[in-house]
Length: 138
Image (cartoon, rainbow, N blue to C red):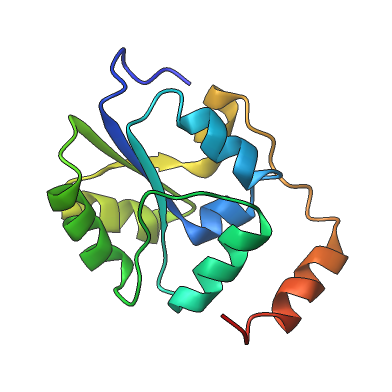
């Protein structure tokens, strides 16, 4: 992915965006080559994000914790002082939150195309079922 020539970037993925990627761990490993910090934000409870990132072996530099996405993006921008702050999301609501917080918005499908990431096909229902049954433990 072209980062505009600078790796001085903080990249935040909405959890929903990570879920449409075939290999979130590979995406994070790739993103680390051209970003300074990369992490996950979500309105979901912390344990949901933690379960997903553990399952997919995603090592994140930050996560939203008990905060909502908007508050998380504001706090992350203050904590991680980089030239760019880019929020990867899935819909107009995510784009609006990015605009409200001063982050650049990038749709996950556009990001995947630019970076060569593979989108999930949605055919693996066993993974979805397992995740649904395991959301109740930290």
